Amino acid sequence: MSFAGMNRRFGLLLSVTSLWLSNGITAATLGPLNTTATPIQEERFVTLGGIEQWITIRGANRANPVLLFVHGGPGDAQSSLRSAYAVYEKDFTIVQWDQRGAGRTYEKNPNSPPEPERVELDGIELAQYLCNYLEKRKIVLLGHSWGTYLAIGMVQRRPELFAAYVGTGQVGSWHASIQAQFDFLLAKARAANDQKRVAQLENIGTPDPNNAEKYFSWWSMRNPYMTPDDSKWFSELREIARANPSVFTEEFMKTLGEGMMYSGRTTVGAMLKTELPTTASTIKVPFFVIQGKEDMVTPTSVAMKYFQVAKTPKKKFILIEHAGHFALVTHSEKFLAALLKYVRPLAIKNERQ
Image 1 (tube, helix red, strand yellow):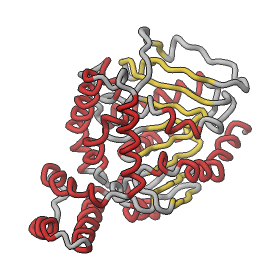
Image 2: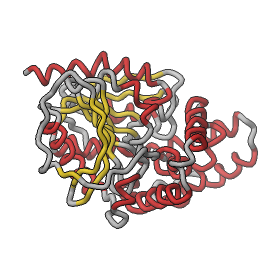
Image 3: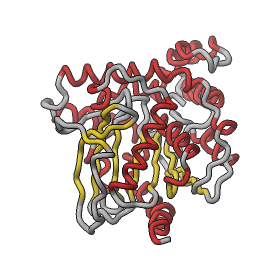
C-alpha cells in the first residue's frame, strides 16, 4: 500500500490547476441552484473546516448524479487534470477537491495539517454543501488510493449523504500490503535474474511494517516492474508539464512538492495503522471496488480480502484486466462502463425516491 511512496516521486505532475479566483465563497453564502439540463463548469474556494479549500465542479448536465472524487497521495490533488477526467463529465457531475495539504488548498493554508480525521470532516462538510448547492439527496463518493481510507471514514461517519461508495486503488491492511509488495518485488527480481536486488531484498528478510523509512528504501526498487499502463500514464503527465510551462512554474512546482512532503509527514502514522478489515468492516452504503488487476501499489489481493469481509447492503468487485494503480485514468472507458452499469442507476434511483 505504498500510495505515499509512489506519489512522492510523481505527485508533482498530478496537481496542475488552471486559474485562481481571488475571493473565497462559503457554503453558507451560496444558496442552491435550480437543477437544469445545462452544463456546469465552476471552480472556486469554499470554506470547509474553517479554511478556504479549492474545488472544481464540471459536468455536461446539472441533472446528472454528483461524483465527489477523494484523491490520494497523500496530497496528490487532481483538480487541474480535466482532460484525464473529461470522459466522466457526460454522465456525472465531477467534483474535484484539493484537500488540506494539497494543491491550491495547501498554498492558501500552508499550516493546516491534513490529519485524517480533520480531512474526513472537511469532506463531509463538502458533501453536505454539494447536496444543497446541486439539489441532490445523496452523492456518489469515489476514493483513490489513500483517498479510499479517507472516503471510507466519511461514509462511516455520515452514510446518509452517499448513494454509493466506489474505491479504486483500494487500501485494506497495511501489514498485508507490505508483505504482498515485498513478495512481488522479490519474485520479479528473481525472474529478471537481478542478483543485486535479490540480495538486497533477501538481506531484509521479513519486512517490518512499522518502519516507514526502511519500507520506502526497498519499495523504491519497484519502478522497473511498474505496469506498462502506469508507466505510460507518468510519461503523459510529464508531457503535460512540458506543454504547460506557464502552469508548471518553478514556484508552483516547489509549492506542490512541499505540500506532498507536508502531507506525507502528517499522515504516515495513520498509514502505518491502516487495518480497514478490522476498523471498517461494516459499510452502510452500496460498496463497489473497481480495481486494476495488476495494481501492486495497493495490492489487489489485499483489496479483495477487505472486500470479502466487508458487510454492506450491496457490493461488487470489478477487475480491470492489464490495469494497475491508475485504472481510473489509464482505462477510463472500462472504468466508466462499470460506473454506468452498477453505480449510476443507484444514484438516479435515490433521487427519485
